[in-house]
Every structure is written in structure tokens, then in C-alpha cells.
Image (tube, rainbow, N blue to C red; front, side):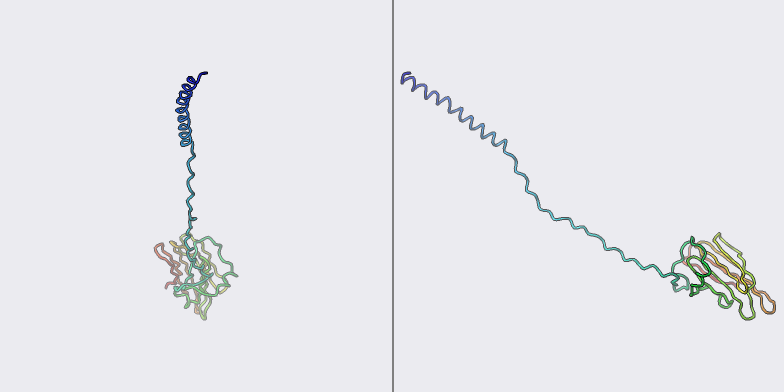
Length: 197
């Protein structure tokens, strides 16, 4: 090949190859820009959530069995549901409840759970002879005469009234009757117990 032809072909070849090389580099740069992976987000430091718990409310201690309130009755009179107390359970109760008019008649008055017992004993010159239920609203009641003692055992239930007639006889054979009232109206917080007259 002559020198003149060689001189002509080299610049032509260079001129043809340089733009291609530039295209190739630009394509690679473009590919690099598009294929570059995004940087992962930096983790944000978070504080653990502090759980706040309300302090437990103080719990009042349950009243002791047979604990009495200022009105002379148990602090708590539960709803009906327990069996009538046994004689041994009654004997274990040492404090009496307030039943107006009972002391002058020689009557012992006790409460255990929802149960009231009024037992009237003989006093000098006067002996109890009979007791009977006269009014009941469906609550359980037991009455009876045992030697020289008469007793009424009745459930004390809010919204229900109960009455029982007690009879005494004097040494001169005169008789007297008094009525035991067990009253606990629905609109009252506490029951009332009394004898009349």
C-alpha cells in the first residue's frame, strides 16, 4: 500500500472510531448513573415507649364479722342467701343489736349475716308464753317457744317488712302482747327494729 493511501486511511479510521469511543463512554456513564443503587436510609434511633400504669386504688379492708356500726346494727347486712345460723353460731355472737323496747321485756337481740334473732326470757314475775308471725313479705322466718324462752329468727331483707307477736303472762295470770317490727323500706339505707307498744 502506498504511503499516500495509508495517510488517507489513518485519519479516516481515527475520525470514524473516535466518535464511537465517545458514545461508548457516554453510554457507560449513563448506565452507571441509572444502575447505581439508592443509599439505604439511616435507622433513626428511637427510645422505647414508657408505659405508665395507674397506681392501684387502695382497697378498704373488709369489715370484721359482726362488726357493728354506730347505729347498733352490723356494718354490712348481706342479701339473703345464707342458711339460718345454728345454735352454736348464735352462742358465739357476744354483741347485741339495737331493738327498741327489747331490754325492758328481757329479750336478747343478735344478728349474724342477714339473720336477726330476738329471744325473750322469763323475768321476775313475767314469763313469755307464745310467739307467732303476724306479717311476712316472703322472707324466711322461724318462731317457737322453748321452755321459758320464746324466739323469732328472721331474715332482714331490704324492701320487706316482718312482724311477730310475743305474749307474756304475769304471776297474777295477766297476759300482755307486744309486736316485734323488722322494717327495712326500699328507700332506707338501714333497717329499724322495735317492739310496740
